[in-house]
Length: 142
Image (cartoon, rainbow, N blue to C red; front, top):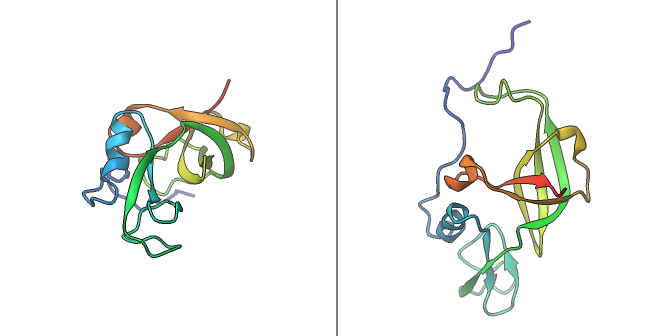
């Protein structure tokens, strides 16, 4: 049985840096090997992903804060099927949701996906994809 891939592109199907000003500081941070998120200046609620108003108090004044680059795996998934050509030779691979302070960030897992488990200590890993402003990646803390 031949597996049909849904994306005819040979390019990596990753988002480019958002032109939306709500995400600008986050994507600029990836280029500097830092992670940033917003906090409502009125009520102190952390917000990710960014919205135009606070989902707690409806405030519109926010401050950007740098996130820690280490945390723990909150949830994860291991991909065994490629949905595009870029990932066809990278199976299996892991995607993790990492608790960084008060925020949960989704990213790629660098390492053996069979090693992932909830509570696994991880740190941000900076490779050519993250530095280009595409996505954060995480690796197990040794």
